Length: 116
Length: 114
Image (cartoon, rainbow over all chains, first blue to last red; front, side, top):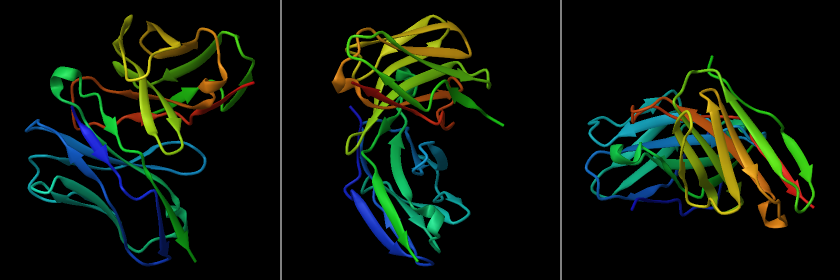
């Protein structure tokens, strides 16, 4: 069975500073993928970034990067130069195995508040 | 642009009512999902459909059923609503068989059962 753990229920960061949101995972599969989503207070889930287990480089998308440490089974999201609009819930998810139609498993989320 | 539309943002129903939550996607995606989101619990999968008329139970299917008669529409049904089904419900869709593709979500329905 797959499991995603986000140990930080809430995080605070000063505007313009960087912040790291933690995500650890557990799986027995060799091939897997990790997603990060952002959920503002309005409710919609927004896809941010994806990392495949065989990707040699850490994924980056603008101010978002994924610190992927395979041996430690961690896939932390790094947001550089935080903005007030980054205040939201953030969810880490792992895609399931192909035999299971890749059904993803979600963590419980981290609430990020950016202070001016 | 990709669009997943949920029929209601807010819904208030009474205990014992039969409740329908509708979700429509315009991306010709094979896979569709219904999640329930509660504070501190993250997203929990209720049902998954991998094609028309095909469905699989998720982690918490009790008290719910689903219908997928057309590819673009996936309905969640609360057979007899109870107060413990008060929650945020999220619908998502995704293309089939490509593991690195993200899910696309609707805006969510905040359902209150009185």
